[in-house]
Image (cartoon, rainbow, N blue to C red; front, side, top):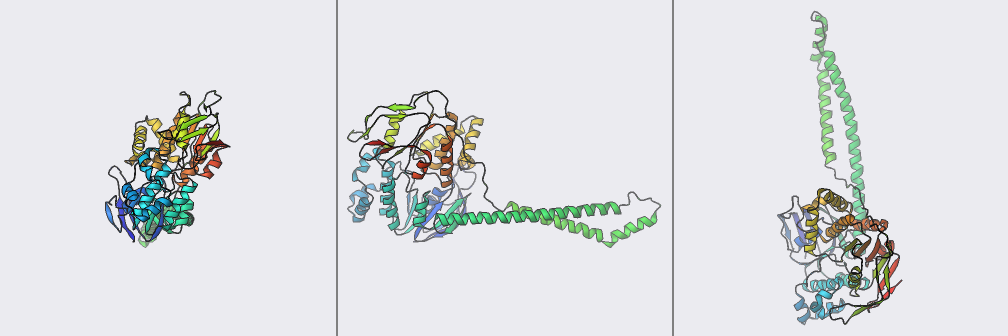
Length: 494
């Protein structure tokens, strides 16, 4: 099954500018990676491909497949058929992805990684033509990630894959679609090859623009020299300062005008000036990616204290029935401490975070970014920024921009993307001067540039850090102590 986009244009009703503009591309069997910054329109592109949205102009042929959202708020549709149809393929997928039939009965207690496995299992079972998958490896531990990647790898059909996971895009994708500023470019190969080609194109565009600017400046200097010659000729041939009785001088100047030499000089100047103006137009329309100021600073809260929070050794329930519990030794978090909390999906990392946050003194400022932020919470975060005092709003949006996203796109949106919402909460956290920063899977939903910028931000902060992540590179750069939940309910400290 092939998918064709032909001059597709799409804009949300609340947007002043299009999300996607004049998108033309074709996709055949196999996986195509879809990449771009947060808010660039990647999820919108997938929903158009799956037939969930219709373009305002242009056409899409071969669409209408299954869209697998990056959000895991709700139980996915079709779960009853998946579990109770008796279909052998559904059973094989459930076994392969280690999906438990009782998950839907205890959905609220599932980790987001477990939810993602069920979501993808149902999508892979239902769809045989077009599958559009948004951030499939978010929330997943190493073992679960390998289960998902293996299942995606064996799927046959036309696939579109949004991910910030470079290894996944290189492993699965034969092409990558790069979306930026409403436009899209399809490049062959995985993300590594595509990024190298994008960089080569950017360098070539930069060289071309420099050459055009050099030629424009040369012609402008020459035009200015010709202008001075023309003006000198006009003064030289003027009768204004000639004695009315000097008929010989008047005659010579009149004959010089008739010769046309000065008219030719003036025509040459005008032609030169037109060439300069034409080059200015070409230069203005030559797109070269620019980089503004990037990265933000989070100042730590002041105050003398010997600990952020403490919990004596004990255990806490992991589920509502209390049948599963987490056991832990004495836990103390001191100012400036940097802790990684690791463990498999469902081990209770988010539960332990909430338990510890309840033990932070109320006067200490805390910046907490949860693992998953719902759609309504995203809208509320945007409304809160819009209602801020003008100075604060400007500061928040400036920091949002320096985390790699466009504030104008954010303010035009009806709903921030999960990545934009995460950056927005971090940018607002500047005003809390947090003593304690707690982030649950902070790299989920962020594009590659934003992950780097967040890492640089957290590396410089003097606040205490408690980070939950499956990104080993991210944790090794930022933390010094590891708390590991082993999946059997025991917390170990390294």
